[in-house]
Amino acid sequence: MNNYLKLAIVMLVASCGGGGSHKAPRHLDNACALVAERPAYYGAMRGAQRRWGVPIPVQMAAIHQESKFVGNARTPHQYALGIIPLGRQSSAYGYSQAIDGTWEDYLKDTGKRRARRDDIRDATDFMGWYMNGTTRNLGVSPHDAAGQYLAYHEGRKGFASGSHLSKPWLLGVAAQVQSRAQMYRGQLASCGKL
Image: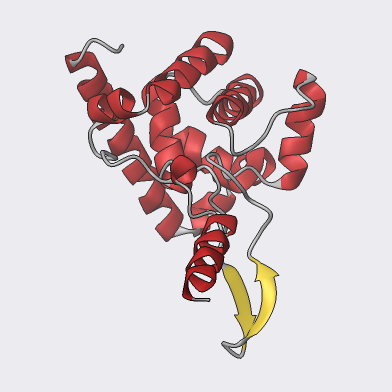
């Protein structure tokens, strides 16, 4: 009976996503160590850079901000009165925290019907696609990590209307994304990955 209980607990933990495939890399502040630990991440970001023109450090900084490189990341649950569950804050999911509607637009535009938000190749391709559209539609340089992040967070219409300007906390986050992109750029250059 005791062995059955242990087996049931192990199976329960495994069914709740206890596996290591969606854990964050150990080295979030060292781009060279991060890509050495997860070479598939580097390959995915290089592919998105080639296809969409968005530099690897910009992708890395945005993914770090959105999900800390956790493939099955979701927004937190909301609660009424602190105890009654109301659902999640948004439909954002995966490495890129793409919301349902924008993800559907990506699938239609690219024809990638089997793409998944928890797949690093698909998530980086989505991010490249979105940021490339921001460059084409709004003139934000693909090297401008802060501007790209603001348009990513607010949506292009929100960014174009200046919705971010009334959110000092978001401007602070965008500055952190810019700083991280610059840090990652320097690190990747030092280990020959740029």
